[in-house]
Image 1 (cartoon, helix red, strand yellow):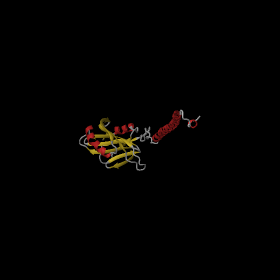
Image 2 (cartoon, helix red, strand yellow):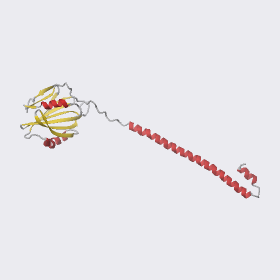
Image 3 (tube, one colour):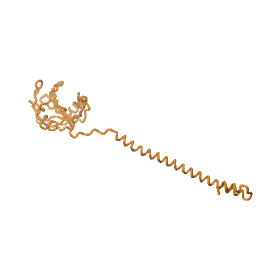
Length: 238
């Protein structure tokens, strides 16, 4: 018997009517409340599930997006295992003697390198390497302190991206000499526009009021230790 049938059957009776109506009302309220609770729980569960799905989807979707963004970043340029500028082991050397001006020295240079005169400097070049010689009257011999205080500031203003200067006194066959090593950017290649990071060795030779500065340069990490030693050791006063 349904609630509606129950109410209809006993609606005309006087005895116990109040109690019956009350009981029916309680039953009806109880049934309605149960239905509402069930619907509410089902709705709440749907919303909860929907919310969870959205959050899960958001987290799941955000992961690949971050990974994709990281993967799209350009990779660092690879370090060259064989940097350009190595002078061949079978390179021949020939003696050079200035033809004019101060002619009191000789030095060996790689055979076949191009020679140019630039503002009082003699320059031998081949591909990415160069040898530069300058002469000057110098009553006082250079030393580690004078090169640090005078030459380093000058080069800092002349050499692009000048860095890592180190001054020391070394010995070559011509005798004690002040060596300045440093790094800097080369001039831009007129054809390719490429700039190379160079390492420099600058030797300051001095005798009887005359100074000859011998600068050897080539790409950083190029294996030119032996050729540069041949050149710097070959310097001789005449």
